[in-house]
Image (cartoon, rainbow over all chains, first blue to last red; front, top):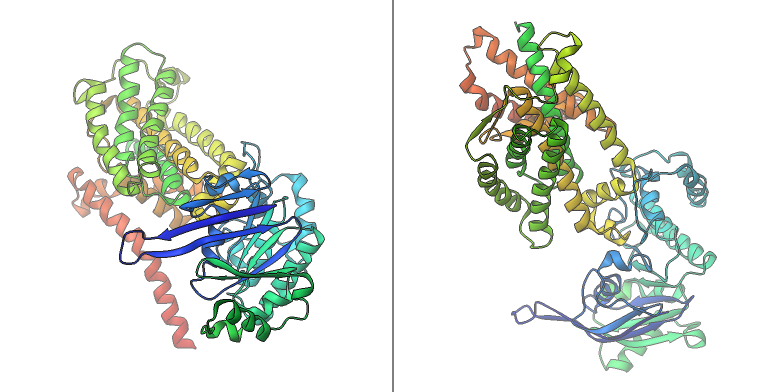
Length: 264
Length: 300
């Protein structure tokens, strides 16, 4: 279980560019939940994810991951519990390392690393098996450099890497946004499949309201660094984008002016 | 043409600079950390080894201490960068400058002669090889052992974590790698190798000198870049081989330039030749692709 309580974070404090990104953000994600997070630009989605991952430190508030207070822990000390896929397909993998080396890095996520060979023979079977589920033929290209793969292929491998070892939560940061529509669909389906099969707890940030409602079991909308609404179960079933917009306006008394949210 | 002695001399220094190139490969290529500490850690290794040998230490033990001293110097640079957030290049310059004083302190004077002392080379002269062949044999062995150890390390879990740190630090952190620690370890290892090179250089030249580090970084880079032009560094082992091959080619090129009377070059032109060679090595691959692309675009 992940719980974030009253997270506050202001960038550029005391400067003319002062920007309060999180203003009392609270969210609890139960085990096995797949939460989609939406919000307009500047709503604090990415900052929230970065705060959970440890890439940014919150000014105040508390983050608990499976009974461990991680609020002040740096990224690498949270990695055993927090898995992540980035928006940029090039960010989640190392292009000058081979596919098997990337997977070997991921299989030791959050564990100590010694001087034994990184790519062990006993891993190869598992690597081939997981790669085969992608149906991209990568299981026969273990020694190829990551840089030879397309953005979609690399994002698929990033997903695989994030799910290679157990985690308390999987963070997906608009991980299909930089891909073409067909590839984005493929990666999204793969995401659902992996989360379902491994019964993962996941938090997916998306820019598309449609995607937010179609995928996952719960939807949270952020606005100005806070949760404005949080729907799951029956309330969420059958909900459409226009209902979501209505909800948002009712909650805030505001018009949604971000076109990209409507178009998504 | 080169005399036999000049040829072996070029091999001997080339093999030593191959070790420097290993170190520079670690910092510049693996960690993407432009580290100039080497100009100070090379004479540091020489100074430590020379003083301990004069004290009567076993030369191998003295050389081991030189490696440790080099590692400490590298660790200082990396800690300045990682813990105190000083720009990597500047951090290395600070350490380099500081080492000049440290080296003078260690030696107590600007240079120390080792000509009459027992060095790591001494026992090898009994093998019956020609005088100028002995260092080449020993340094070849040292280079091979270092290459194999480095190669195994790069393929290990920790080594892979280090490569990921240099290539994609954000991804490395997300995989639970303490990137700061990896930078400290890597830059320390890099300067340990340079300290080893300095210690061997002092023993083969018969002296340690406080100025012997000037330009080591450029020579190491020249070796690295030149080697990469000859052997494409597509794998770790090829990249390491490129370091040694590049260093030897570089020394041979220098020896040839200085020995070819037609060019009229003299010993004092060494640094100028080095700078020209490095510039060519950096620029030429780019020019080659530019010409090639112009060719293909005309066809199309």
